Image (cartoon, rainbow, N blue to C red; front, side):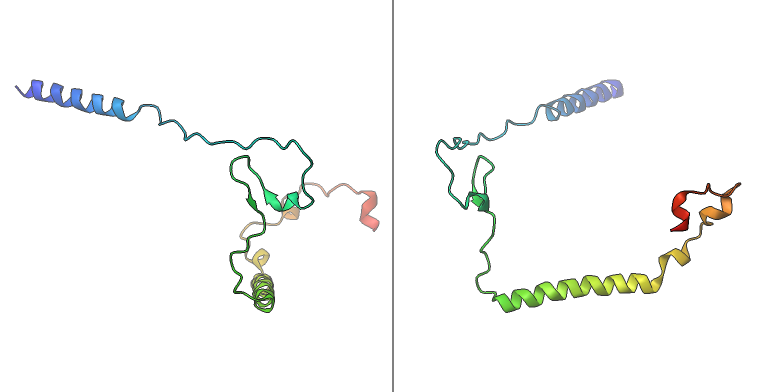
Amino acid sequence: MARSRIVSLLRRTSTTTIAHRGAPPPSAPFARNLAPTEKLVENHDAMWDDGVAPEVTIDFDAPHITTGQAAKIWLSAFGGFFTLYQFCKWVDPPSKNPCVPRDFAMVQPPPKTNFDDM
């Protein structure tokens, strides 16, 4: 009796796993744009055309932000990167490296080159 329950349970789990491992559904069909047959306009490079849905490369999603505000945001972002760089330089990560320097493990001195005199 117990054996038949185990066999039926194994049959059920094996059939459900096989059903779930099938092929994925087909991709949605996309209507492709035709290749241009006449000369392109001068500012065609400002369009991102992936063959399905061309869109303007420069987004005009925020017309409420003035040029001054955009410049302030841009400069503050570069100021943040500069501050982060200065902080990393102040922390001095090479001094906290637990490994010995490469010169310590050298058995013989590195070969001399013509660039050593410069």
